[in-house]
Length: 93
Ligand SMILES: Cc1cc2nc3c(=O)[nH]c(=O)nc-3n(C[C@H](O)[C@H](O)[C@H](O)COP(=O)(O)OP(=O)(O)OC[C@H]3O[C@@H](n4cnc5c(N)ncnc54)[C@H](O)[C@@H]3O)c2cc1C
Image (cartoon, rainbow, N blue to C red; front, top):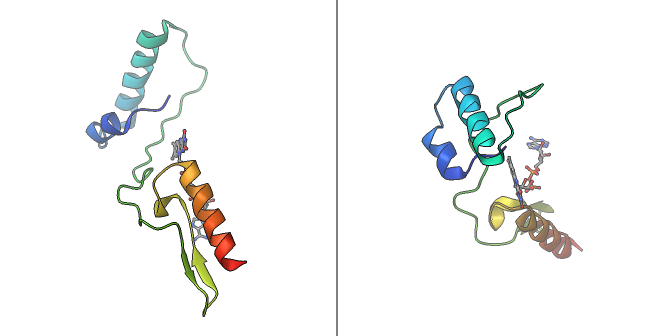
């Protein structure tokens, strides 16, 4: 299960057990599945999403031969990471 960014923000400092209980309850309500899971783990990704992207696809300094790329350049999704990496590779080539 993955909580929305808004829900996670609201419950950011909640106890992990409490969050787990709430998400399991929501899962049961949404799916109708009442089975007890064999294993449950809770992970808080505090910095999971870029809030303010760089606004350009990559950074490349030809003089030093140093470049940087990642989803944070353009957004917070895997396609942003792909485009960023591709653009840096094209700049290096
Ligand atoms: C819970 C979650 C769910 C997601 N779901 C989706 C989804 O459904 N769809 C979607 O499009 N995107 C999703 N994303 C976002 C997607 O995972 C990222 O946009 C993408 O992985 C970013 O790729 P990246 O290469 O920029 O960074 P990363 O994938 O974070 O890669 C960075 C790499 O650098 C390594 N690293 C960090 N510091 C160092 C260091 N000092 N030395 C060496 N290595 C280092 C890390 O170990 C990591 O392997 C999700 C993200 C999270 C957290």
